[in-house]
Image (cartoon, rainbow, N blue to C red; front, side, top):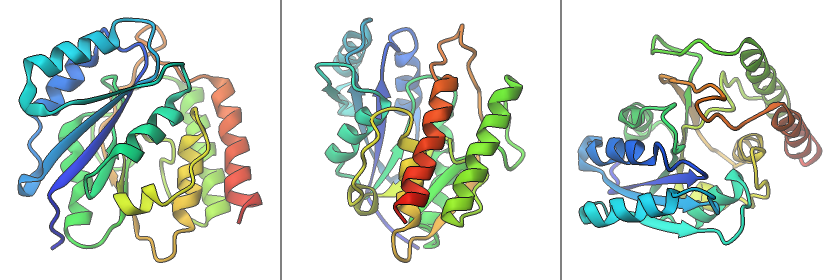
Length: 241
């Protein structure tokens, strides 16, 4: 069994003032297996709403959480927010959590399981495997996700089912040792391609739930991000092998 003390939770925030308190409630109530502690780092990517104020008020109300709020002076993108949070993390392992309500933090323990058993260094939470709840939404998004995962597998020789998932759990020394460049949604294919090249890395997937949002409910990713993802798959997975 692998023992460690702290899981760093990186939350990129951009105009999530309406729901950020809800995800913070879920993180506050979360109990990790083996009494693992939580380091919660939020990175406000220059939101134009009251996201930062909501987080600061929450931190005052629940000081025992030890929330850390980092702020960008200008909007740089989700990937850049993740770079900032990853660099600041001190836990032995790092997980990514979106500020919306599409993913359930209670399932962190599912991702931690292969790590604690000594099998995995990196764990992806797949929305497309297992028997967990999955909201039915957009046909073309599902086709896009499948093709992006397929292309990633081609250039990395992996057999992932969900490259674009938010839930990615990394051993801290691995993720902090990567030279990450993509500042927006290209983070997902870039980090996957670079993790795949880490000598001896053990990458696992576990099935998770997915409570997806519509665009009316605040979903931000669009078709342009899909084309950027294809570019990043080729750039980091094929051209830089």
